[in-house]
Length: 288
Image 1 (tube, rainbow, N blue to C red):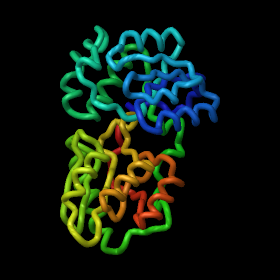
Image 2: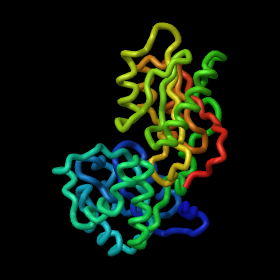
Image 3: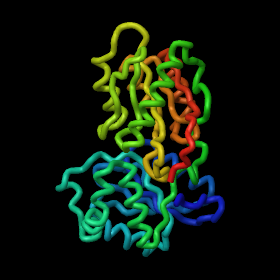
Image 4: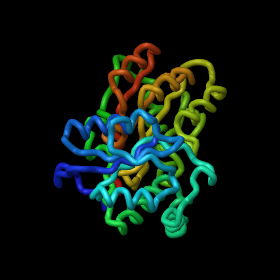
């Protein structure tokens, strides 16, 4: 069951479990605008220290679940947002405490299933602890990607066939909880996203690119995805990496993916004569 929209039940404070990247800061800015008091959980080796500067926070390791839960409860926080990228830690870095070990023991089959399984497992586990998980879009609705071109460059007529094929393939991958993205070039599937993420996908695809019109990155929300966790995300660095890969453009799932700093994205795309476009995906799926 999806978390209730924040606007339907006003919240005065929220716990932000912050990974890397720009999204935690964007969420904090949205909290400031809406008068929501954030409490930030920063993770060693993951979170940018600038994010927690001047904020109420706890600085800890990923595996300290018991300490995190106790701290959040002591601050009267029952609503949470997980946001930002997390680099896969080693066991030594994770050092799970008893509460974290309990989570992995209860949710092992879901965790093995993929990111969607992890999100559902966290929702269920933390729900039993009295917490509610919300997606960043519940607070910062302006981060959802709009439909249409971002920037002045439009896809060429020949690009649409690749975009449509990319949607089909990415949705099939997503249904298996494998990945969210695929790169297509002139009808050929060059590569699909795995656990390494979109940036690494583009890095390994560069050597596979054929001469002629560059490939297209298509990134969509998984069918049945738990949408309060790990929505597809595109930001300035994505477009910089796409240009370095030699791509002709990027197509993202309008209304179901996050677009960070759209003005900067448009400037970078225009500079490299690339298109970035939000696309509607026809599906009866409503997510979780």
